[in-house]
Image (cartoon, rainbow, N blue to C red; front, side, top):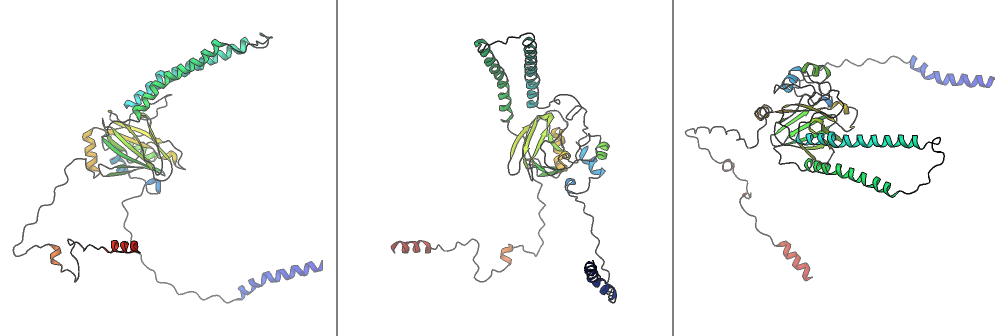
Length: 370
């Protein structure tokens, strides 16, 4: 016991020694005060980064300018979910054909098949239960039954395959494009590039308050819409800058994956002006649910005005006029800038051809003779 007390005392002395030394040491002299340095005021940056990347939300003026530039307002039941069971109303030829195929062929076929199987199961359960059928049948083959259950599924598949293949052929054989837009998925916003017009847009979701103020549906409104002209065949080149996304607008029957390093193509054409919403349909990260899509279809004249407002130019339009020539000043002779600066000694003019060398051919002949 005494030994343990001695060990504890020694450990306490060793542990407290540095503390005692630190307490007995004289206080350190304070450092001289450093002069305050005034930093120049930084100007406010008017170009905010994308909202999804940590930037500021667009102001009310920006929302009003981008959302109602064409005067179009969203319509309930058009281009947006409204609580119905089934497909949204379609506004493209491909969408109308696909909706007819779904409603007129697929749904009746699967409904009849499901009812037939349900009735058949109920009949077998009731007819061949142990109480009503104590001696089971030993039938192993029935030629007619096997022919029927082989031919009927084949006929059903043929009925489904013919319009399905026709729809796929039309969907992946688009007509000549009137407008090309490159769609780039980012975490977590969309970038739209108009290569023929020189326009690039960054589209972020509006907050709930901004969407309510603009009269648009929650978590579907954006600050920059994908604007296209009505009646034009729009080709979309879809890709991604980081992870796999998916660009989709249900009212157009459009859905295409955005894969990094790959360019996928899809298209749509609608004649009805309006606002149509979509979403990213591929799980792409923490804010996957907050990168909506808004497509604004406007008449051709309004599309041209929108292109001009964004600083773009319509294909085939005349370039801006060159500035007028400066009047000549008497007594001043304008010469070629290359003639004004004297050439350095030994410099070779750009129009002169250097002498042709045959050193390589001579070396090859010598190596061959050797």
